[in-house]
Amino acid sequence: MGKNVPYSFNVDQLEKSFLQPTLMLMGRQDSAVGYRDMWQIIENYPRASFGILDRAGHDLHIDQEILFNEMVKEWLNRLTQAAETSKKLSMPLPADSGSADRPTVLD
Image 1: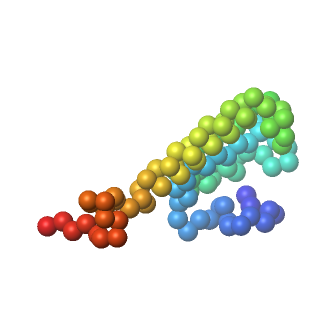
Image 2: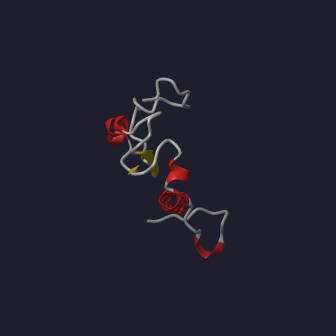
Image 3: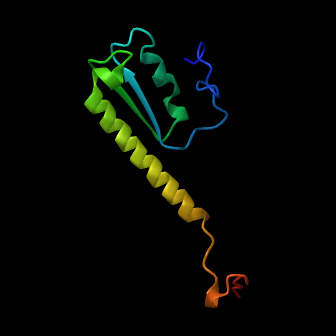
C-alpha cells in the first residue's frame, strides 16, 4: 500500500500494533488509490475505524463532506478521550498531609 508514498513509517509492516485511535477513510470510487488494500492491514490497528464512503472518489472530503466531517469529529473525540485517560494514568498520586515533597509510605 505505501510503496510510492513516503510515510514516516511503513504502514504495511508495523513492528507492533498501533494502539491509538485511528481513522482510515477511503472513497469507494477512488480510481487513484482504491480501497481494497486497506483491509490487509486492519489487524495492525485495533483501535481503528475503517470507512469506505460510497459516492466518493479520491476527494472524499468534498464528495461526502457531511459524512467525512462527522467521522473526523468522532475520531477527534476519541483522541481527546485517549489523551485525557493517558494523562490521568500518568498523574502522580497526591501526597498525604499536604506535604508534596515527602513521598507517602504505606506499611
